[in-house]
Image (cartoon, rainbow, N blue to C red; front, side, top):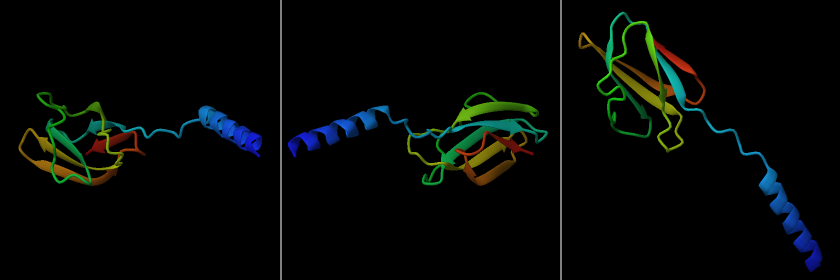
Length: 109
């Protein structure tokens, strides 16, 4: 009986060691600006967060017809994010519930 349990445990350990890991979510999204205005601030916060966090662009701007790739992996495992952009003319635009795990790009138009 002990020999069978030992063999079963060894087989289970080998299977676990060689099992391929589940595909990790890709949180990288190319943000494309097709609005006609430069984006001066960009915020992306997961749906579980109650604040916009920091401006992802920092001192940079995202001109019209330009793009930037952003990694939204904030360590929480959340895929749904809300976006807020501020434009050079002072206008703002929000987009709620963007699934950053399933899209590769997002265009502001």
